[in-house]
Image (cartoon, rainbow, N blue to C red):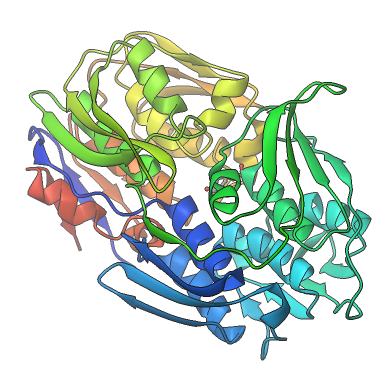
Length: 444
Ligand code: S3P
């Protein structure tokens, strides 16, 4: 187990090379394996969670290569997928398990989807129930947890076209059901209470799948409707944008560390992902969005970030969904803001890689920050100088590990993050990037 020691006080300056977007990398690998022919996806994220997706594709006998971030996948088409040998090990990746379940259901093959102890604790009822409504025969461990066992469908039989009304906005659940909808006998409709990230809609539409989205008229919410494509999915040829959720750690690091000035080129700016950017701007952050453009069907821009004095921020409603992965690093920003920042409507955070409300509050309190935990969020009483000077436990959560390290960059005393190897799950170059920018961080 490695410990990341953060010695505060050095300004961060320079230009950052971001890893490819995690959500888009997962989708590129999986959707490409359903296409008819060879797909290319450059700037693919090489990390723990995407390695889990690729190893599942290997078990499904899909041919792929990955060299210097260049992924090539030989798609077999929905009809070409075969029963895997052994179970599909999704590691720590809920995105892999939930999206793969939809693809396996569409392909009509038998498979067991499993993962780490942590993944086995995460809720899967939210995909099991709607998949069953579509006619998928699926068994699960007690509590509707992984391993999930999907039974093969008789050849020639379609899944039932269904309207799904989701209780919680979730791009993973939506994408699972969209993938299952590729093998339905008509339109699959998914209504979410708030709009979640739409990477699947954009990518599947570019591959020739009829997909429409907009406000639902008969129910309160946002709906996506998908029809099975007339032929094989068109292969992809894309360069994956930089990951906003990785950039978020460097943005906050630059804002809270006095004297910092950063340029982050090629950041994905999908509106379903940039809630933290909106929040930080409201808090008075000096962030400029430069050179807005489109890449791989997604909005992209370059960000210039300069150290700023932050006001407190308040988060609720749709904003929660638009920054669902950014609460750990939002907390690091709020720790240095002027006044109490609060988060509500965010009970979903309890079901991420860790209980991101309980774990975050416990670890920030160790850094002598005043925090109050609520069922659906937390309040952080920001202070100009966080004492720090403690060892913290990221609860095997990559985003918690990086956020606690970032919080330490502007503290009064060093901070040690235990179990820092977990960072590799989503941002393998995190420590090297911070070092190149001038931060004093050591892995020991
Ligand atoms: C993801 C969606 C989010 C997010 C996860 C990746 C995706 O989960 O937390 O890191 O790629 O679709 P939910 O949509 O289930 O909240």
